[in-house]
View 1 (cartoon, rainbow, N blue to C red):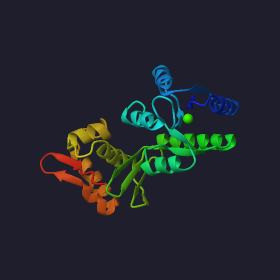
View 2: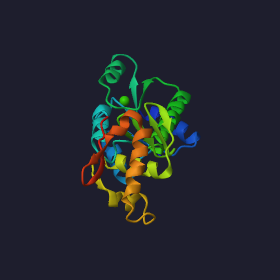
View 3: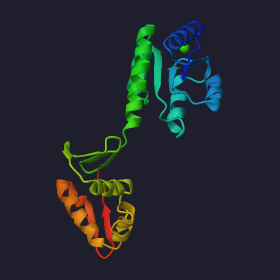
Length: 224
Ligand code: CA
């Protein structure tokens, strides 16, 4: 579902018609108050947001969207008249995902909507965890250090994943055994030490981020 906030009736209707003809569900709102009513009913996948509106302007609406955890990641394309207003809005860097300068063509609009939706989906698909130069990509099950791919065994990967998910937290060897190995090696805490050792070596200079907490276990410093 795409929401279009645009006070000019003919422009709004043309945008909605084009989006629907392109296979999108779309709903239009002529002013901010109506848009906020719509937001209470359902959250859209993307918002086309005009700047000059009769009551609340698009800049204020965007700021509110970005300030709210429930709406801050909804992609927004700002539409604005070409010229000084356009330059000003771009200069403000309000966190819109894209800008369309009026008058814009309908095919251009659909292309931008598709591009922003695609980018958003890619971002959602891949969750990246980082520490130092280490990047763990959950969706690809892949680890890189300063851009080079690191070959990890399943247990090494699970250990690193656990540390990255809980930055700075100290895990005892017994905790690591039960979380990563389940019951396979119950009581064999040396197994943990051996795997931490090979993991550190494979991570290169960032291996030092995995710290031994004497008499307790291990923690990972997440320095970005
Ligand atoms: Ca307007």
